[in-house]
Length: 294
Image (cartoon, rainbow, N blue to C red):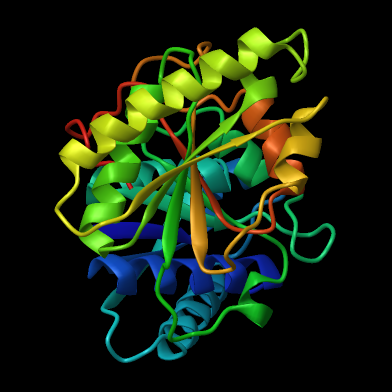
């Protein structure tokens, strides 16, 4: 089991590396740190010298080597310098070639402890064939380097694609041996608002059914809980949730996503604005076998 880490010598790169270390230790996985450089053919108008290109490659190699040296000794990691038209394209190419479980990037740059999705993360969230895990701003500064995941939260809804999220969450909880929380935001599936009693009843009934299925799929001894949260807006509901700093949230892709690809939907985007913990977005009908998503 391996993860691709989209690395840059920036705070966002450090955030990605910190989240990757936590996921790797929790699942016994290896890491592939990838730094993407522009393809040389893009510089046809102002050609660069071979010496400058060599310098850029060597600098990238040194950044990657230094980054790996900061990882705890129990985490196995390799590094790769990839040439592509864009950073997101290079990460996707590396993920496909290396056959990894997920791509991990830093999505900070905004308010400390929150997400501000830049161009790279945005491109991945609308095209990646594997799950994309996002670290919030400042994650590297607050994360315990020796910590492991303590809980996985799966955002479950009534729409198509929820089963993929559940499969991924069950697999992660089972391999990491951590509790699973099933989170249902009533506003997710009730456009008319969270105060609708029928919407709340549907959410409770669905959550109970999903919880029963998760308990059957998980090894004995792993706790499964459900939580129904309400709010006039999705953001309000998310803010009312109590978050464990060492957990990760799994959400599904939009119905607009191509099969086996990501396309982050409006609900997940709204959740992302207020989440203080890492999030992983799961593709529709992943190319990985069912239940093996990160």
